[in-house]
Length: 349
Image 1 (tube, helix red, strand yellow):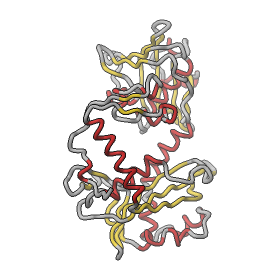
Image 2 (cartoon, rainbow, N blue to C red):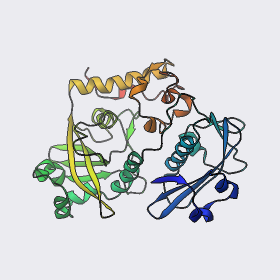
Image 3 (cartoon, one colour):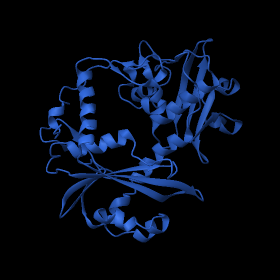
Image 4 (cartoon, rainbow, N blue to C red):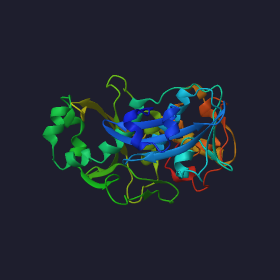
């Protein structure tokens, strides 16, 4: 997705003529399609106001709005505040909060003066949209039913494809979390933790979960699972009996995608099998200990330099937190639901 200042060819999408005249109208497009428009007004040397945000095509509105905010900040690095008055233009509060706005008499986004301003990373955003689209294709379900195997095999460069995927290909899919109406939420034995795995398969050795991830990174760049993906998979593994299922293995699959002739194709993969181990138990226990600390209103220190700015703003607790701007390395959150406690995971540490 591309973000740019509006051109004469985009005039029919703009609400206020002054926005075009003052170069304060932005357009989001994908190919030849205009996805949305964003207009703002510079109030003074420190402040700007969002006066119009409109979407024309189905999309993740919060991600598009965040892209507009990043583009606006890039062209106006002196700004300290961005405001929005919902009496003039209604924007979903969740969309505003996703980008860090807080509600006072009007919505306000305070911009740190020492924040590094940059344009949105289109390749990283591309991963978000691709992941949504590719999950809907139910790739593994098609493979396990014997459909389109020739197609995938022709695309994927790996002589060990069938060997690696043998268990999945020969198992029965008993649950899926995408492309279904109201996917089933599975609860742990005590009902205190829940999850929706991408797939649950079953064979004569028992049940196992599978999580799919899609990336436009190169095959050489990604040699180990990302930590947040690994934690997600381990939670499924260590839940005390996810309803009737108890997993001894969880598979994490990365599909590598590239664009050919205007279309996306899977050209390779990495398959990771996660099993119960002392290291994995320590890793998952550390996460729950941190959650418990937050419940007790304790501050938690984070290595600011290691944080991903764009992923950070997706966090539901973003409005409470300023470490993504480098303001400090401490995050103090409202306490989480007390039902999230570690006595509902199956650990032997």
